[in-house]
Amino acid sequence: MKKADVIPIAAVIAAAVIIALVFVPKQADTVRITCENAVYEYPIGENRRVELTENGVSLTVLIENGRVSVEKSTCRDQICVHTHTGSIICMPARVVITVEDGEYDHVAG
Amino acid sequence: MSQGKKTNKIAVCAIMCALAITVSALESLIPIQALIPLPGVKLGFANIIILFLLFRYGVFEAAITAFIKCLTVNLIFFSVTGLIFSLTGSLFSIIFAVIMKYTVSEKLSFIGISVGCAAMHNIGQTAAACLVLSSFAPVSYLPVLLIASAFTGFITGTVLILIERRFKKI
Image (cartoon, each protein chain N blue to C red):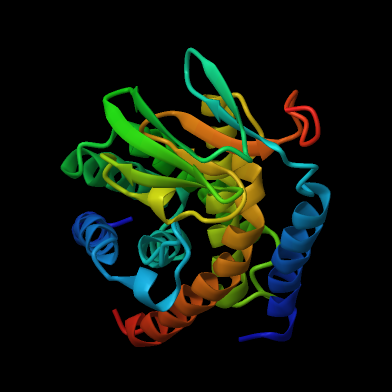
């Protein structure tokens, strides 16, 4: 290992920190499920299961206790099932699940 | 290049290609999820072989091996989506490696280059995902992937340095 090796390593870590700071999670009260041809929105406060079948993959999105997760999925990698923070993405299904600021208001909704 | 050396080169490239495919397929069987509970993190051992070919022979040999590796591994696993991301990631990675080779390779050892390659591979895949999904959501996972790249790049870089020492004689 040479001295200058720290440069790429430090640069990569710095980039990670900067990106993490820029993509700050915003006020989050709506679960937005973006599929190829449709977008579904649900308030995060209401417990529910959403069943979807997209691009041949069936997945069950669970909204419970103010958290979103993918309960099960028929995709091969199961990355979506194991993601517990941030946006949940299932590439084979082309589904993106995010928690954002939406029309649902804690007070009125 | 003499005929003997040419044949030698083709033989080595063919073996390296098969090795890259095998290593890539096998590493997805290693349960690193048990050690590191981060979905989508790969060890990227194929990069060792690509860099080996790049520095020993040249861009063409490295690029064609990477291309064949991506095609074959994704065909084995019947993954068309995977193919798109594999190719994009490898493309970014190789471009970075080539730039490194022709500019700073005296100052950087393979560790620095491998870390960069790993990072570029992840950036390439994230960019492809953003395009496919028409969303910036994949970027939220990039910081995690980048930190992982620093570690996996360090590991693959070290392995390459060890391999290079033994290959000096061949």
